[in-house]
Structures are given as structure tokens and as C-alpha cells.
Image (cartoon, rainbow, N blue to C red; front, top):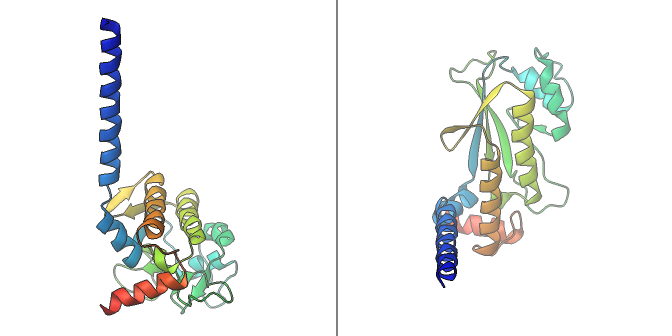
Length: 204
């Protein structure tokens, strides 16, 4: 009988540990935080440690050169497979597919200078991603941008105010937000219902 009691106690302890671990994982991102991120978006910052890009360098990400701003660092050309376009002369993003009801971009890459100088290189690029404004398949592109920047450029990545070395943290957070949109908000990201929810939230 004693061995059976020992096994039973061991199973109870393992079950308690699993429940505790599951509770901790769930509590890492409270529902309100997931809702805020779905509505307001998340920001990821890529800080250039060296070879800071000029506008001409970043324009290489579109797969072409800007004739008015010749590039200085050719490695940005390695990011052209991302399919980025220049938006409003200042930002980079991906236009929505023809016929998509959502005429707003789900994410933007925003070049940033600490001390503004039109001719100076950029210190960082901010990526603003709003899950509800973007089809869920765009989440994979956001993850890919993070991976491509890390692999091809000399950058430090900041997420939620902390330097990030493990990209799985971002991937898991994005997956959790999309799952929250579907399970709790009852909308598919990028859909008519999702955009209507955003607009209603802003007007309340």
C-alpha cells in the first residue's frame, strides 16, 4: 500500500505544479492588456547600433532606389522580399489588397531621429502594429519583419520597454492577441466587424 500512496501523492503534486504553471502563464498577460493591445496596437522599436540608415538606405526595402537619395548601406536591399512600399513620403508599410474593405494599414514602419535633421541617418525604426486593423495573416509578416531585421541588420530590439533577444516572446504575444480577438471579442482581425468595433470604441 505504501508504494501506491507514494505514487498517488506524486501525481497530486505534479497536477498542482501543472495547474500553477498554467495559471502563471495565463496571468502573464491579463485580458484587459490583450484587449488594449488588440485595439491600440503594439510598438516594436529597432534601434540601429551602427550603419544607421538614411532615407535612401531604407528605400531599398521597396526593391528600388530613390533617385533623389542614393543609398549608403546596401544591406537594406536584403529586406526587399518583405514587399514593403513607401507610404506618405515618410513611412513604410504594405498597402491592403485590392478590394479589401479596410483602407487603413494594419502596421507601419516609422523612421525616427532623436534630434531631427532631414539629412541625418535615422536612429531607429518604430513598427506600429494594430491587430484588429490587419488581417490575421499579416501577423506572420510582422513576425518575419522582426526576424529579418535581427538577422540582416545590426539592431537592438525593444518591446514593451525592454531589450528583446528572444523573438518567440513577440510571436507568442501576437498569437495571444489574435486568439483573444476571436475568442473574447468575437471578431476576425481585419474584418468589417473588427473595424466597426474599433470605431465604436473610439466614439464611446
